[in-house]
Image (cartoon, rainbow, N blue to C red; front, side, top):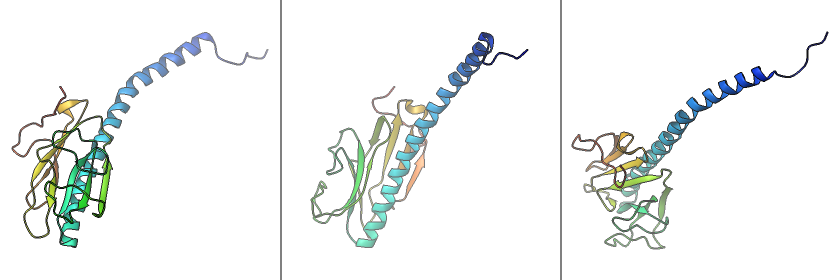
Length: 177
């Protein structure tokens, strides 16, 4: 006598329970993976922007500006939310720096994280033969200080990633609890 094809109700329920357990344990881990990847991408993009600005200042013998931007066309005002950043050659030596159409745009990045990016500097100026502006930029997503990362730029323009501020204290996330 041939066996019926298909699944019994019991087999279907067991399969659904196992699938639900795998799904319930896998989704939070995947969500954490995605948040970590976005945060790391933004930190790496900031480090790349610092390196591009530092290198181009030496190569061009001109001041190069790294500043936050909301629209990838002009520097944001201090205190504005950071949506991304850009690097450009400051040919007219404007102060505070504002990019004109004649100034080469070297690098632009739109932020991946949904959270806050806060720097203790309104912009970073990289110069060919003098000390640069030092500062710290803190990247926070919705997980807050537990997952916060920072990029600390030294006086020589060398960036380093950190999980504590320059004084060794835990990082603070603006506007997040």
